[in-house]
Image (cartoon, rainbow, N blue to C red):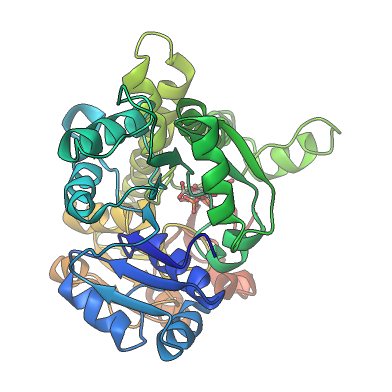
Length: 413
Ligand code: SAJ
């Protein structure tokens, strides 16, 4: 087998499922992470992140002896880098985790190795990674960075999986593979053929980088359109949910769903990488980000106005997760709104989140209480729907007749 041993650098939401799926195909996989806790957890066959069925796949791979985790890189045939690429101040991409990964693997690289960057990256990042590796290992010849015939392979293959459906989409989604040369793309296809059933489409590294950013920006712009419509409809006293349902009956119209804002670690971040690369030209992409980032403030304004009508209202916030039917609270507009409402001291804040058992410390420290939907509705004067969890859908609407309802997600509409 061309890839008898694969190393995955970064065992988070993308790296760990990828490592486990490759291991489940019988390939020896070593996962590298800087967190001792993550490494220990995985080596016990357990997981430190929540994703349906991931625990089973990891446990099986570890038990079979095909997957193990370590803090220290070791030689392998292929290295897949799946580390975070957040933005730093000024919404500029922060490539420091990629640079650290390059520093970590450089000493163990060998002639003929393939290095794939999976992290969502600004255009030019794969070239930078290659340059860093070349500088660290002048004895090896990297494509585009050595005067000699390359003996190393580098490609970008952006991850595209939807949190909550990672294991299914890892295998079934098409992949875009942008090699530093045609040979690099071919080599990377061999690696992805181990576990991908979708098509592997090849292009340049720069186009692959831009493709990933484009996908998430496309979604962000379309959500911004829905969010802007919801604000306009509020002004014009029109039910935006009815409006969208009607407009979507046109064969070429497909408006997305307004919400309390855009959360998660991807869609609210990636468009800024395009804005940073082309600040003068990326006007619509920047505006979409601003519209979506402004939506929590709009919802808070509505609650504040409603609260003014009471002395000290009880406000029930339904949902804390960043989208329906998951327990992931990171970068969640619903959580942000709930916390900001508590800090405004408008009244008593109750949170309902059926997917968690305990509130994060910062919420309890702000005096917020976690209640069941029934208990919260019983007490509340104002009900703010933030996330359309399935548990809320069967809600007996007669409970709401006596409440002020602020429905940011169209649960009741
Ligand atoms: N949202 C709305 N209205 C909608 C759809 C979504 O307000 O109509 C909100 C959600 O509530 C959430 C946010 O947008 O707060 C993002 O959710 P999402 O389900 O659209 O996407 P993510 O962030 O979970 O995953 C995205 C995916 N990208 C696309 O669908 C183009 C996924 O395929 C990527 O792999 C992932 O980003 C990533 O890692 O980049």
